[in-house]
Image (cartoon, rainbow, N blue to C red; front, side, top):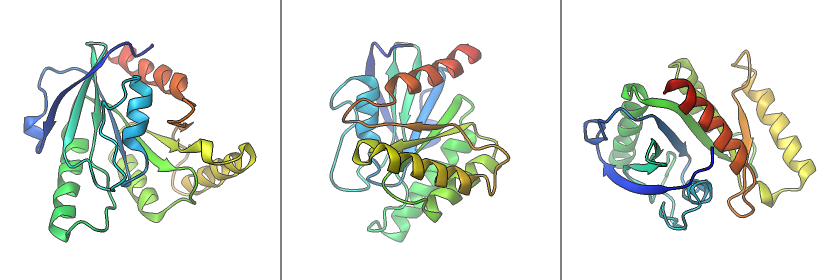
Length: 199
């Protein structure tokens, strides 16, 4: 499934403000500054569709983009933005949890992690929470172009080993680079499997 068209639809502060047309939704989330907006722009082939910023915590709303006039790509606020106030972080957390647990049209949640770093406790805890709530998820390594093939393979193995401490089978894991386009076709094919099955 090639992504031929993608357009911004709306930004929402609350779950009840999100689109209600029942279209399938594929959501992206990750720690602040993980490269989420860049990955969305690479995947959709629309520069500037998702706003890229050097400042962590730029995405503060639930952003819906309509893809191929068929399904929604959803850009969720990043978590772990330490410079935000406690009240603001609590608001983000509530927004994220209410969307993930309350959105019947959410078919898969892609959790983005920076391939350059070892597995972070906050990421692992979030992934575990998603799994415990039976939400379909996949893990996306970003910025893979920053590592050699050998280092990347090592990072993947270590990450999967840590996941298997809590999971019987590791969730699907994709390697991507917004710079080189690595992983675009694999992500498109995986998304298509959800969209096709649930149509």
